[in-house]
Image (cartoon, rainbow, N blue to C red; front, side, top):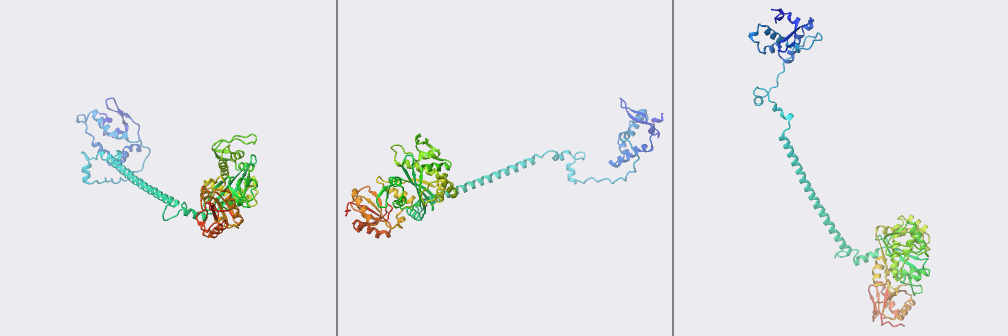
Length: 547
C-alpha cells in the first residue's frame, strides 16, 4: 500500500492536497509545495476561530457525518473518502497572510432569551422551532387594524358633518332673527317718520314738520340767467338747508307777481329785465324768505363755467336743432348727454314753439344741477372757479362767498340729497295754495315770521268779489295805511263775506287794525292758516264797500 494513501501518514498532508473531483465524483489529488510553519498551522487556527464563533468544534461536526461503508473501509476508494472528509475544511479556510497573535480567551456563551413555558408551547412548531407566521405582522398589514382605522375615520367624519349641520342651522336661525329685527325696526322707523305712531311725532307728521321747519336754517341765493343772444331771462333760487344737509333748486316763473317799492305789482321777468334792483327784497316779501344775494349769470359766462368744470352730463328731454346764425350747436335727446359749454347754453334756453314756460325752466334747472355736481367740493377751489368765470355784479355776493355756497350745495347734489321744484303760480301771477303749502313752506321755509323784522307788517290781499276795481281800491287803502302789500291774486270762487285771518296770536291786533283800515267789522277777523306768506291775509268778499 502506498504511504500517500494512508490517512494517518504525517507527511501525506504536506505532499498532496485534494484539488477537485472527476466526472464520477471521485477526489483528485495534486502535488503541493512545502509550507511554512505558519501556513502549516493555518488549518488549526481556522478550526479554533471557527469554534470560537459558532460554539462547537470541527471534530464534533465531523463526527455527525454518516460513517463510511464498512465494505470500503480498507479499500482504495474508502481511504479516499476518508481523506476527503478530513480535508474539506481546508478548502473553506482563508489563505493565511501572516502570523497572528494568540486568540483571546473564549467568551462565555450567551444565554438565549427565556420564553415563558405557555408561550413556548403555544408558539413552537412540531420540531420545537418558532413558526414564521408568528411575525407576519411585520411584513403584512393587519386587515382588522385597517378596518378599525376606516371605522374611526368614518365615525369622525360623520361627527364633523353633524357638527357642521348644527352650526349651519344656528347661523340660519341667527340670520333670520337679524332680518326680522331689521324689518321691525325699519317698519317702526317708517311709522315714526310718517308720524303714524300715536305716542311719537316724526318729522313726516304735521307737528314734526312744523317743528322741524321752525328750527331749520337755510341759506339761499337767487340766480338770474340772461340770454344775451335771443333775449329773455330765467330765475331760480339755490337753497342750502344747513340743518337737514339737503339742497334744492326752486324755479320761479317770469309771471310771478312781485311788489314794487311803491306797492304796485310787477311780473318777475319784467323786473329782472329792468335791472333786477330790489328783486331779492320783493321775492322775500312774496315768499317770506331771506335771500342772501343775487347772482347775475349771462349766457357767455354760463358757457365758460361749463367749460371750466369739464362739461356736464344731462338727461335731455328734447332735441335742440343747430342754429348757424346764432352759432348754436345741436343737442341730441336722451339719457346722460354730454354737453359742452355752448351746448349747455343752447339746451338751458331752448323753448319750442307753443311750449309752456315751465318746460324751458325745467331745462335750466337740469343744467344748473349738472353744473353743481361738477363744482369742486373744496370752497377755496370753488372760489377759484368762480373767479375764473367772472361776472357777479352783486356787492353783497363776492367770489369767495358764492364759491363756498356752490361747493356746499354741490356736495348735496353729488350724493343725491337734492331736488328741483317748480313754483306754481296762477294766471294772475299769484301763488297757488299748493305752492304755498309745499314749495314755499317746506322747501324754502317761508312763513310770515320771516318778515316780522320789516318796518311795516305784510298784508296779503286776495280778491273774492269778482270785481277788479274793488281789489285796486283795497290795495291803495293798505298802502296808504303803511302796510307792505302782498298780492294774493284772485280766489277760485267768489264769496259773500270778507274774511281777515292771522296765524300767530301776536298778530291779532294788527289784523283788527287792517279791518278798520278797510272799513270791515271786527267780527271778520279770525285765526287760521294763511295760504299766502304774510302776517295778515285779507280775502275780500262782496260785502266790501270801497270808501
